[in-house]
Image 1 (cartoon, helix red, strand yellow):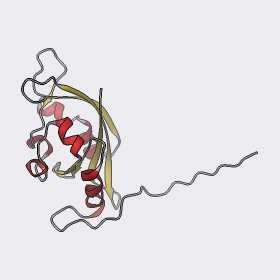
Image 2 (image 1 turned 120 degrees about the vertical axis):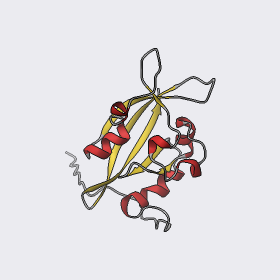
Image 3 (image 1 turned 90 degrees about the vertical axis):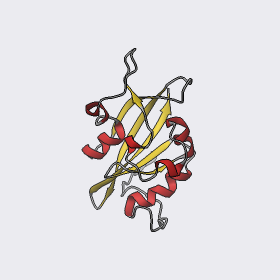
Length: 151
């Protein structure tokens, strides 16, 4: 009978030197990977500032150019989140605290949920599934990494 052994170790983070103007540690290491990723993803730091977003993530979230969002708080960088009512109103501050990127950051745990993103004028809104994980530095939450999937 075949024997399979599984070993778990610390999460792999690419060892890439981050430029001086970027974050250091785990968040800085992930920034390079996220900014080049083909998948729609987003990286924020512990202060909710956008550190990196993939090109497909910028298109999906209607965020524009990297220089327009990098360094700004996630919700001040042009991201417009709508509720799921027929009215399609903007999310309240109480509700935005529960979106996966922020929930993973504040709870230190995996978070998942649906988001309704307001697209450009005249375009239909996008509903996306967001899965977020906290990014740790020496056991402390230093940011969150979110992957998106269009529904």
